[in-house]
Image (cartoon, rainbow over all chains, first blue to last red; front, side, top):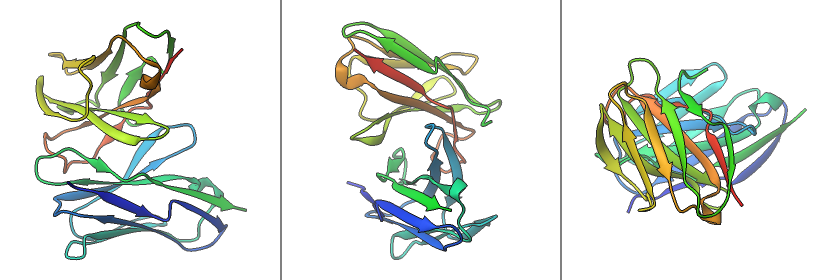
Length: 108
Length: 114
């Protein structure tokens, strides 16, 4: 059974801090998604990775396929980054399996 | 704006009732996924349709059913509703049938069962 673990569950940071959210999974995957869910409930896809590293603005996502691990980094964090960040993986033809999310609060 | 439209945004109903949630995918996307998000369970995959055909099934209850129409919009039907069905229901669309395409989510339909 494919399990997805995220850490930490909750994170509070001061504005400007560098933030790292981790995601580990238990089986070989074909892709990993990082999603952002704001307090209003809407979900936005941030990245889809199958190898290496992707960068978009202040967000960087990396994946290590051998170690079955991915990280999402936020540089120069801002209060508007406050949200729940969710990792989800695709293994073979099975649908997405989601982590429970990391709740991030960035304080000004 | 993701391009995925879900209606209704909010729905309050009573136990035992039946509701229909609607999803219009992003233009050009052939695949529609339905997910349920409850407070204690996180996001759970329910069902996927690709170009009108059921592609994959997750933890979808027998009281729930879905279909995708020729114009590619999809409907999720929830019947004999129970208090525990109260949740946010999201649909997402993607161009491909596998899970390796970028996902575009609707804003969700919040269902409250009283």
